[in-house]
Length: 185
Image (cartoon, rainbow, N blue to C red; front, side, top):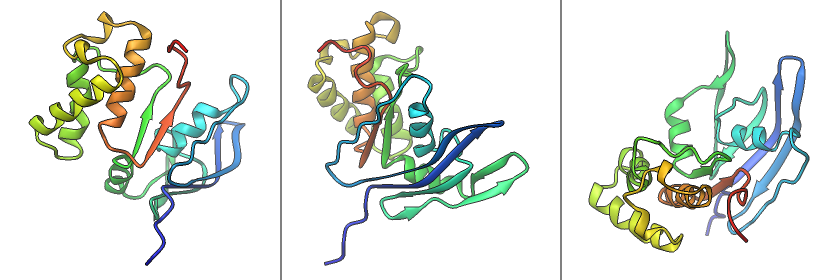
């Protein structure tokens, strides 16, 4: 039986903003079931590293391999960019991120926030996505908040909603930026 590819393999990521090198050749391998924590001072590059893993920021150098598929890059007049954005969409379907500021869409209810990507990215039917979203909302203790808008919820409720939204993609890898910042112990 062939070995299962590693869900996330990040090699020698470098990120510069102008003359400031924020990330200097960072690497990590995340195997199935691993929990990896990045700890460091504010401004040390933790969020930037997570954003590079999800290609929300383009690394200046380094390799990103998601479930055995290496992301291809090309040099452009704007710097290094993914060579194939369809490949990035496939990669992001396997990788979910919960942002430090949650990034729930203010004009959508919590339920609508959760079903958006499964319907439009994974191609699930709205009925399937709603059923799964309701299970996830119950799991994070927000089943009675499905029709609330983000402004009607506390920070902790928004964060749990963002976690449910990320889980709705059935990801192989979850990236959390400040995962407990708004949650009670």
